[in-house]
Image 1: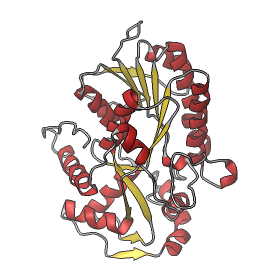
Image 2: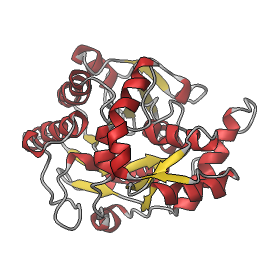
Image 3: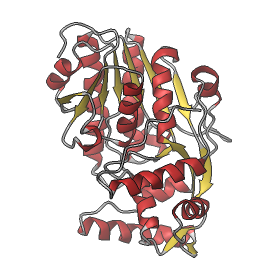
Amino acid sequence: MASFRDQRLAVVTGASGHIGANLVRGLLAQGRPVRALIHSQTRAVDGLPVQVARADLRDRASLVPAFAGADCVYHLAAKVSAGWAPAAVVREINVVGTGNVVEACVAAGVRRLVHLSSVQALVPGPNAVDESCRLVEARDGRGAYDLAKAEAERLVLVAGARGLDAVILNPTAVIGPFDFQSSPMGEVLLSLAHGRLPALIAGAECDFVDVRDVAAAALAAESQGRRGERYLLSGTRLSLVELARLWAIATGRSAPRFAVPMRLASLAAPFAASWARLRRRRPLFTPESLRVLRNQRPVSRGKAEAELAYRPRPIEETLRDTYSWCKEQVEPNAPVAAFPHNR
């Protein structure tokens, strides 16, 4: 690893995750040297011309040498949970881990930190969610993940006030290709494609954003984002019924014919979550995920459009490309599609 700061070296935490896999490919498409921080799985970066560094967010001592020589650190590593992971683990990785990343950036002399948060870290306004919304607090009755992402943002903002050059991005629900570890939404799409979902949930809505557009926005934030600012990254707002219909068109597989009322799904959610835990699987829906799906507000992306040239692609393109990528994974010799630039 370099002992001096490389003017182009980018370090990506969470490089094995969904956004990380796409961001690494975007950086490589720019000709950038990349150091991919991996905790365990390497599948997302296997065969790519990157430096691989093993590090643990909970171990600050492992981060400082991993950040050595970095011009920019993209902090994507996180523990995503809608009630299926212990709250202590969610906080340790998202909050303690982010604190360690911030301190390691300062110690290593990193020029800029791009921090990936979530729109769930914000309390919606009466009509919409925008950058002026306040961060979630314990009194808001939100889940462990929302609270942890909000607390992590506060750590980044405090470090920024003390001199760290940091930019924050808050995407909505991320879907798209290069999802090597099956993200929560990726698992839902796979379940739909394989006919494992007998019914949908009526009244459930969400804003879905293409992972490649999030990665492109992160690249733009490194060079164009204003220090200490937050940028919301939204895409297309759909009900789960509408998403399933569009996914059926992309895959040629039939969508579930039935939609369970939200009230009935809410009653069943605790039992579904308990059954999934007994089988050591991540539940497809929980009381917390249903709370999120029934309390959606429109998410503004005007600031990202104006300052980062953010232009999310049509959801139909996202779903087609996601299915094409999924099919390639069962054909080991199939070519990997080139990283598409944001439009």
